[in-house]
Length: 211
Ligand SMILES: O=P(O)(O)OC[C@H]1O[C@H](OP(=O)(O)OP(=O)(O)O)[C@H](O)[C@@H]1O
Ligand SMILES: O=c1cc[nH]c(=O)[nH]1
Ligand SMILES: [Mg+2]
Image (cartoon, rainbow, N blue to C red; front, side, top):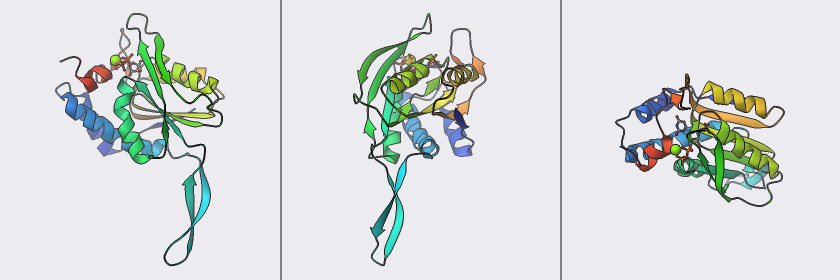
């Protein structure tokens, strides 16, 4: 598994504002979108491309084009939806599929409650969007779901991750093509499975369902 933790002052600055409990939902949404565009730059480093030639007004130029089948971007509802615009801004030709998942706050087990993906994911490069990688249960379930459908490699873009969740995914996906790109790697999980220091419940903060 390849893990990339962002190391850029602009990204850390924006994450610091996200963490602040006083940041209201409209600003939280705007910052999330900006952060994803910055993280997507790293996440797409291995996007599959092919050589192409174009004619400039002066001569021929060789370059690259994103290969077919197009990359598939999969936001994990609800909180991952807040990351979609930021991602497709960078990869406008990507196809988008959806997975709805919710973590049971007592057992911390994830459940899939909605799915709208292409039937056949063979040979597909997938980019999963979910702001929070806590126990890793939700992301692991999403990754397994995509591999079971035929995906060949999965890159997850998360704003924050916990070491416990990262280790769990690494162990469970050994031998698979998995990349995780994080805005920050936090300290730990607390005893109710929240990331510390974290930013609270990302879905609630994005959509204003508390506070
Ligand atoms: O790593 P885990 O321990 O599985 O926790 C992370 C999951 O929890 C949050 O979703 P949540 O279940 O709160 O759903 P929501 O997006 O609808 O708020 C988050 O967006 C992840 O999907
Ligand atoms: O800290 C956490 C953990 C899971 N889900 C969240 O939204 N935040
Ligand atoms: Mg939530």
